[in-house]
Structure formats: structure tokens, C-alpha cells
Amino acid sequence: MSHHLMEHETGLILLDATTAAAPPTSVIAAEDTPSLPPAVLKALRSLRDSNPSLQRKLNHGIIDVSSSDESVGYWNRHNQELVMLSPDNNELIGVNLGGLMVRLVNSVPFFQVIEDEKLNCLTTVNFGGTDIGMDNLLEGVKLLSKDTKASIKELYLGGCGIGCRRGTSHLKELLQLQLLTNLETLDLRYNDLTGKDLVDLETALTSTSNLKILHLEGNYGKCEGAAAIGNVLSAPESNLKELYLGANQIGSEGAKSLAEQGLRNNKSLHKLYLEGNSIGDEGAIALRDVLLDQSLRQCKVLEHLYVDNNGLGKEAATTLGRAVNSESMIDGSLLDG
Image 1 (cartoon, rainbow, N blue to C red):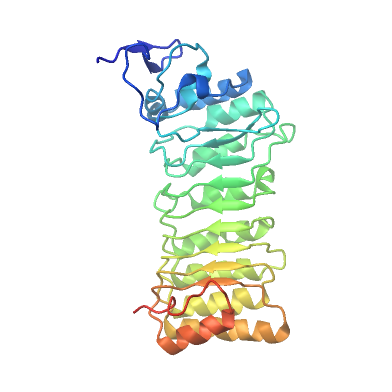
Image 2 (cartoon, helix red, strand yellow):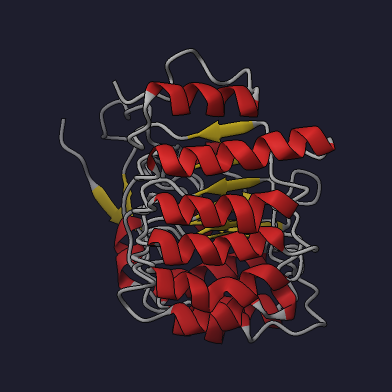
């Protein structure tokens, strides 16, 4: 059976359901998509129209032309929501481009509409994997005034090449904006961030005192970066609960810095991920000693420590596991074989 393509008034290419074969389950039918408020449509349209890659992505996945509602264009063929709406009043609470494999070149028009229409419920921005430039993102977010009252609590920027594109200074300025005062989750994984980059970000990360989850895995932090993150952990105002530092080329000295500069005086961290580094027995012993000291002082809060693939010997791994005293540690899980 042949497929007939029809052009919607918005410019999106729609598949004529009257002649098409049964759709795959990964495609969302128009009648299953919620109708979006005009202000939300305006914001999403501005994002789509200023980014050719996104516009091409949204040309797929619509299987029903029975509705002229433009809302159907913002649900993609992979069944992943681009739009995040509050369940009670249909307000825009987030935009999610993570995993869509699109490249953002301009976010400014989107944030301009957020400001103009006073869409003050925006709390989640996921631009992960979009290669959005930090200078452009900073320019856009700066448009939001105090009157808009938006407060971003979750910011996902993984895989955007921040380090290799020299975006660290703009990211630092972004994190210190009033709009991000209540930031709770920050995802910076796989961004080619070096130890120097993490040192440069130390002040901004420390000042983001409501931050609870920080993803930094897959970067090049090394020992220098680990020391900087140790300083973030040791700050009296730190509220970090989960820290992801896997695959950062951290050696034993970096592990020592994390333990002695960071964990020793930290009162909030529950989960620490260090898998795929090179902390060795020396780093493991440093972590162990700090955890045992905290246990004696009855101030240990760390519950889960992940150190797979770190070159640990049996004795160092066993004693570290006992120091953590975590049920998540299965016998032998710390060993590298």
C-alpha cells in the first residue's frame, strides 16, 4: 500500500492515515497527543524554526491528519516527549531534546518567548547531546527576568562538547545566574572537561548550594579535577547527595583529595561513583581511612561507593567495602578479577 504525504499548515510533513498501513507502535497518533496552550506552542515553534536539525526531526512520526492542531508536531517518532507539561494546569514545565540526535544552534528565540509570555513554570531543560553552545544558552537564559519567576531545577547538558569548544567560562556564568539558584540536578557528562575546567567551575558549583545530583562521568578531570570537586564537597553549604565521577582518569592522588579534602567534612553525600578510574590500592585506602574515621565520629553519611575497574587488590577492596558497610556491595564486586 502506498503512503501519501501531506503538508500540514505548519510545514510539518504528515502521513495520510487513510492510505497508510498500520503504524508501528513507536509512532504517536494525533488523537493521542495533548493539545498545547497557544503560548506553549509559540515557544516550541520558535525553538523548532530557529534550529533546522530539529525542524527536520519533527517532520517525521505523525500518522493522522484528522486534526489541524499544531500540537501533533511536537511528539516525535521515537515516542519520546519533547514537551513536559504539568498534569494539573497544562503549563510548560520542561523541554526535552535529550536523545533526539538534533543539533541546536540557537536557543535565544525560545527563551525570548518564555520571557514574553511569562511561562513561569519552566523547571527542566534537557539539551543533552545537542551541541548547544554555552554562549548561546547563556544569552538565552539571561533574557528571563525576575518577573518571569521561572526557576530551573534540572539542567541536562551531557555530550555538548563544552570543554573542547571552550564553553567553560560561559557555563560558569550561567550557573551563577539567579534563575539557577534552586538548581538540583546538573548533568555535564561526556563534555571533554579537563581538570583545569573543573577548577574553573569550582566556585560556581560551590555557590549552587541546592545542587543534589552532579553528573561528571566520562570527562578528563584527572587528579586536578578531583581535587576541585573535593573542595566543592567540603564546602559547608554543600547539599550534594549523588556524585558521578566515573571514567575521569582519576589516580590515587585524586582519590586522596576526594577523601581527605572532600568526604572528611561532607555531611550530605550518599552515593559516590568512581568506577573506571585508576585509584588503585593507595586511593582505596585513603577513602577507607576517612570512612572509618567518620564512623568513629558517628558522622558518616556515605551509603554507596562504586569503584569497579580501578585496579584494586583483594585486601584493599575488602577493607574499603567493610568501611562503607553498604548492602549494595556484593562480595567481589570491588575486584577487577
